[in-house]
Image (cartoon, rainbow, N blue to C red; front, top):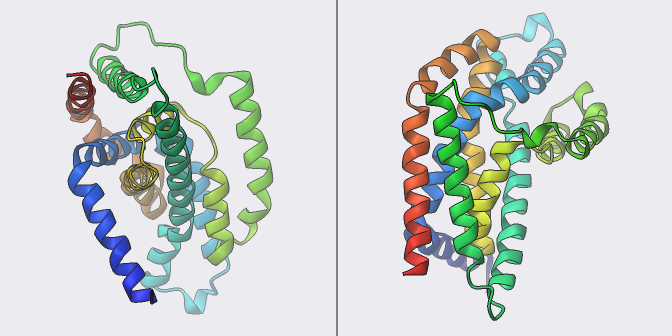
Length: 256
Protein backbone atom coordinates (compact mmCIF):
# COMPACT_ATOMS: atom_id res chain seq x y z
CA UNK A 1 0.00 0.00 0.00
CA UNK A 2 1.48 3.36 -1.06
CA UNK A 3 1.64 6.52 1.01
CA UNK A 4 -1.42 8.11 -0.64
CA UNK A 5 -3.52 5.03 0.07
CA UNK A 6 -2.41 5.04 3.70
CA UNK A 7 -3.21 8.74 3.99
CA UNK A 8 -6.64 8.23 2.43
CA UNK A 9 -7.39 5.32 4.77
CA UNK A 10 -6.29 7.40 7.76
CA UNK A 11 -8.46 10.36 6.76
CA UNK A 12 -11.44 8.07 6.24
CA UNK A 13 -10.96 6.58 9.70
CA UNK A 14 -10.72 10.06 11.22
CA UNK A 15 -13.95 11.03 9.43
CA UNK A 16 -15.68 7.99 10.94
CA UNK A 17 -14.48 8.97 14.43
CA UNK A 18 -15.61 12.58 13.98
CA UNK A 19 -19.04 11.45 12.80
CA UNK A 20 -19.38 8.93 15.64
CA UNK A 21 -17.85 10.92 18.50
CA UNK A 22 -18.50 14.48 17.35
CA UNK A 23 -20.15 15.44 20.65
CA UNK A 24 -17.15 14.32 22.67
CA UNK A 25 -14.70 16.13 20.37
CA UNK A 26 -16.74 19.33 20.48
CA UNK A 27 -16.91 19.16 24.27
CA UNK A 28 -13.12 18.92 24.46
CA UNK A 29 -12.63 21.75 21.97
CA UNK A 30 -14.86 24.12 23.92
CA UNK A 31 -13.34 22.98 27.22
CA UNK A 32 -9.94 23.92 25.79
CA UNK A 33 -11.26 27.32 24.73
CA UNK A 34 -12.69 28.07 28.17
CA UNK A 35 -9.81 26.50 30.10
CA UNK A 36 -7.23 28.20 27.92
CA UNK A 37 -8.82 31.56 28.59
CA UNK A 38 -9.47 31.25 32.31
CA UNK A 39 -6.52 29.08 33.30
CA UNK A 40 -3.80 28.66 30.66
CA UNK A 41 -3.11 32.37 30.18
CA UNK A 42 -1.95 32.55 33.78
CA UNK A 43 -0.14 29.22 33.88
CA UNK A 44 1.37 29.00 30.37
CA UNK A 45 1.39 32.68 29.42
CA UNK A 46 4.84 33.28 30.97
CA UNK A 47 6.23 30.37 28.94
CA UNK A 48 4.86 31.92 25.76
CA UNK A 49 6.19 35.40 26.56
CA UNK A 50 9.63 34.00 27.37
CA UNK A 51 9.74 32.27 23.98
CA UNK A 52 8.53 35.35 22.12
CA UNK A 53 11.24 37.48 23.75
CA UNK A 54 13.96 34.93 23.01
CA UNK A 55 12.87 34.54 19.38
CA UNK A 56 12.59 38.27 18.62
CA UNK A 57 15.90 39.08 20.34
CA UNK A 58 17.65 36.94 17.71
CA UNK A 59 16.16 38.87 14.79
CA UNK A 60 18.43 41.75 13.62
CA UNK A 61 16.76 45.15 13.69
CA UNK A 62 17.35 45.53 9.95
CA UNK A 63 15.49 42.25 9.29
CA UNK A 64 12.57 42.98 11.63
CA UNK A 65 9.20 43.14 9.90
CA UNK A 66 5.56 42.75 10.84
CA UNK A 67 5.61 39.21 9.43
CA UNK A 68 8.64 38.32 11.58
CA UNK A 69 6.94 39.80 14.63
CA UNK A 70 3.72 37.88 14.05
CA UNK A 71 5.41 34.55 13.35
CA UNK A 72 7.70 35.04 16.34
CA UNK A 73 4.76 35.76 18.62
CA UNK A 74 2.71 32.81 17.35
CA UNK A 75 5.27 30.21 18.60
CA UNK A 76 3.58 27.60 16.42
CA UNK A 77 6.22 24.87 17.02
CA UNK A 78 5.51 25.13 20.75
CA UNK A 79 1.77 24.70 20.23
CA UNK A 80 2.39 21.75 17.88
CA UNK A 81 4.57 20.13 20.54
CA UNK A 82 1.89 20.56 23.22
CA UNK A 83 -0.73 19.09 20.89
CA UNK A 84 1.54 16.09 20.25
CA UNK A 85 1.92 15.40 23.96
CA UNK A 86 -1.79 15.81 24.62
CA UNK A 87 -2.64 13.51 21.70
CA UNK A 88 -0.26 10.82 22.98
CA UNK A 89 -1.71 11.08 26.49
CA UNK A 90 -5.23 10.88 25.08
CA UNK A 91 -4.43 7.86 22.93
CA UNK A 92 -2.71 6.03 25.79
CA UNK A 93 -5.40 6.77 28.39
CA UNK A 94 -8.22 5.81 26.00
CA UNK A 95 -6.43 2.61 24.97
CA UNK A 96 -5.87 1.57 28.60
CA UNK A 97 -9.44 2.44 29.57
CA UNK A 98 -10.77 0.57 26.55
CA UNK A 99 -8.87 -2.62 27.41
CA UNK A 100 -9.86 -2.43 31.07
CA UNK A 101 -13.49 -1.69 30.18
CA UNK A 102 -13.57 -4.79 27.97
CA UNK A 103 -12.93 -7.02 30.99
CA UNK A 104 -15.96 -8.76 32.50
CA UNK A 105 -17.66 -6.63 35.12
CA UNK A 106 -15.79 -3.45 34.19
CA UNK A 107 -17.96 -2.15 31.36
CA UNK A 108 -19.07 0.65 33.65
CA UNK A 109 -15.65 2.34 33.41
CA UNK A 110 -16.57 4.54 30.44
CA UNK A 111 -19.77 5.59 32.20
CA UNK A 112 -17.82 6.47 35.35
CA UNK A 113 -15.25 8.52 33.40
CA UNK A 114 -17.92 10.44 31.51
CA UNK A 115 -19.86 11.09 34.73
CA UNK A 116 -16.67 12.24 36.46
CA UNK A 117 -15.86 14.65 33.62
CA UNK A 118 -19.46 15.92 33.60
CA UNK A 119 -19.26 16.64 37.33
CA UNK A 120 -15.90 18.36 36.82
CA UNK A 121 -17.31 20.71 34.18
CA UNK A 122 -20.47 21.27 36.25
CA UNK A 123 -18.34 22.22 39.25
CA UNK A 124 -16.25 24.53 37.09
CA UNK A 125 -19.40 26.31 35.90
CA UNK A 126 -20.76 26.55 39.45
CA UNK A 127 -17.56 28.11 40.78
CA UNK A 128 -17.66 30.67 37.96
CA UNK A 129 -21.22 31.71 38.73
CA UNK A 130 -21.35 31.27 42.51
CA UNK A 131 -18.08 32.81 43.60
CA UNK A 132 -19.24 32.71 47.21
CA UNK A 133 -19.03 28.93 47.26
CA UNK A 134 -15.91 27.54 48.96
CA UNK A 135 -13.41 26.45 46.36
CA UNK A 136 -12.66 22.79 45.99
CA UNK A 137 -9.11 21.73 46.81
CA UNK A 138 -6.89 22.22 43.79
CA UNK A 139 -5.24 19.11 42.45
CA UNK A 140 -2.54 21.30 40.97
CA UNK A 141 -1.15 22.26 44.38
CA UNK A 142 -0.23 18.82 45.67
CA UNK A 143 3.37 18.14 46.61
CA UNK A 144 3.78 15.36 44.07
CA UNK A 145 2.32 17.49 41.30
CA UNK A 146 4.46 20.49 42.24
CA UNK A 147 7.54 18.26 42.25
CA UNK A 148 6.62 16.86 38.83
CA UNK A 149 5.96 20.32 37.37
CA UNK A 150 9.28 21.61 38.67
CA UNK A 151 11.11 18.62 37.20
CA UNK A 152 9.53 19.09 33.77
CA UNK A 153 10.25 22.84 33.80
CA UNK A 154 13.85 22.19 34.83
CA UNK A 155 14.41 19.69 32.02
CA UNK A 156 12.86 22.04 29.47
CA UNK A 157 14.77 25.15 30.61
CA UNK A 158 17.75 24.69 28.21
CA UNK A 159 15.36 24.84 25.24
CA UNK A 160 14.24 28.38 26.14
CA UNK A 161 17.55 29.82 24.91
CA UNK A 162 16.58 29.46 21.26
CA UNK A 163 13.00 28.16 21.09
CA UNK A 164 12.74 27.91 17.31
CA UNK A 165 12.17 24.96 14.99
CA UNK A 166 12.66 21.58 16.61
CA UNK A 167 13.74 23.21 19.88
CA UNK A 168 10.42 25.07 20.11
CA UNK A 169 8.60 21.85 19.24
CA UNK A 170 10.57 19.93 21.87
CA UNK A 171 9.75 22.63 24.41
CA UNK A 172 6.05 22.18 23.68
CA UNK A 173 6.34 18.40 23.98
CA UNK A 174 8.08 18.72 27.36
CA UNK A 175 5.80 21.40 28.83
CA UNK A 176 2.75 19.45 27.69
CA UNK A 177 3.49 17.09 30.59
CA UNK A 178 3.00 19.84 33.20
CA UNK A 179 -0.19 18.79 35.01
CA UNK A 180 -3.22 20.95 35.71
CA UNK A 181 -6.79 20.40 36.83
CA UNK A 182 -8.39 21.24 33.48
CA UNK A 183 -6.13 18.75 31.77
CA UNK A 184 -7.33 16.01 34.12
CA UNK A 185 -10.94 16.62 33.14
CA UNK A 186 -10.04 16.51 29.43
CA UNK A 187 -8.12 13.25 29.85
CA UNK A 188 -11.12 11.68 31.63
CA UNK A 189 -13.31 12.56 28.64
CA UNK A 190 -10.76 11.21 26.15
CA UNK A 191 -10.27 8.01 28.15
CA UNK A 192 -14.03 7.40 28.29
CA UNK A 193 -14.06 6.89 24.52
CA UNK A 194 -12.07 3.66 24.88
CA UNK A 195 -10.57 4.32 21.44
CA UNK A 196 -6.96 5.38 20.97
CA UNK A 197 -7.78 7.37 17.82
CA UNK A 198 -10.73 9.14 19.42
CA UNK A 199 -8.64 9.89 22.50
CA UNK A 200 -5.85 11.35 20.36
CA UNK A 201 -8.22 13.46 18.25
CA UNK A 202 -10.09 14.61 21.34
CA UNK A 203 -6.97 15.82 23.12
CA UNK A 204 -5.79 17.47 19.90
CA UNK A 205 -9.10 19.35 19.82
CA UNK A 206 -8.54 20.34 23.45
CA UNK A 207 -5.06 21.63 22.59
CA UNK A 208 -6.44 23.65 19.65
CA UNK A 209 -9.00 25.21 21.97
CA UNK A 210 -6.23 26.53 24.23
CA UNK A 211 -4.34 28.21 21.38
CA UNK A 212 -6.36 31.47 20.84
CA UNK A 213 -5.79 32.83 24.35
CA UNK A 214 -2.08 32.00 24.23
CA UNK A 215 -1.80 33.58 20.79
CA UNK A 216 -3.33 36.75 22.23
CA UNK A 217 -0.72 36.72 25.00
CA UNK A 218 2.11 36.16 22.53
CA UNK A 219 0.95 38.89 20.16
CA UNK A 220 0.14 41.64 22.63
CA UNK A 221 1.17 40.45 26.08
CA UNK A 222 -0.86 39.80 29.19
CA UNK A 223 -3.05 42.86 28.61
CA UNK A 224 -4.56 41.21 25.53
CA UNK A 225 -4.77 37.95 27.39
CA UNK A 226 -6.79 39.59 30.16
CA UNK A 227 -9.09 41.27 27.61
CA UNK A 228 -9.74 37.95 25.86
CA UNK A 229 -10.21 36.27 29.21
CA UNK A 230 -12.81 38.80 30.33
CA UNK A 231 -14.80 38.37 27.11
CA UNK A 232 -14.86 34.57 27.23
CA UNK A 233 -15.38 34.40 31.00
CA UNK A 234 -18.86 35.87 30.52
CA UNK A 235 -20.02 32.84 28.54
CA UNK A 236 -17.73 30.24 30.13
CA UNK A 237 -20.31 28.96 32.68
CA UNK A 238 -22.89 28.38 29.94
CA UNK A 239 -20.36 26.53 27.79
CA UNK A 240 -19.30 24.33 30.68
CA UNK A 241 -22.93 23.60 31.61
CA UNK A 242 -23.60 22.49 28.03
CA UNK A 243 -20.49 20.31 28.13
CA UNK A 244 -21.60 18.74 31.41
CA UNK A 245 -25.03 18.06 29.92
CA UNK A 246 -23.61 16.48 26.76
CA UNK A 247 -21.24 14.23 28.71
CA UNK A 248 -23.96 13.30 31.19
CA UNK A 249 -26.27 12.41 28.33
CA UNK A 250 -23.53 10.26 26.75
CA UNK A 251 -23.02 8.45 30.06
CA UNK A 252 -26.78 7.86 30.33
CA UNK A 253 -26.92 6.45 26.79
CA UNK A 254 -24.25 3.91 27.72
CA UNK A 255 -26.31 2.78 30.69
CA UNK A 256 -29.71 2.79 29.00
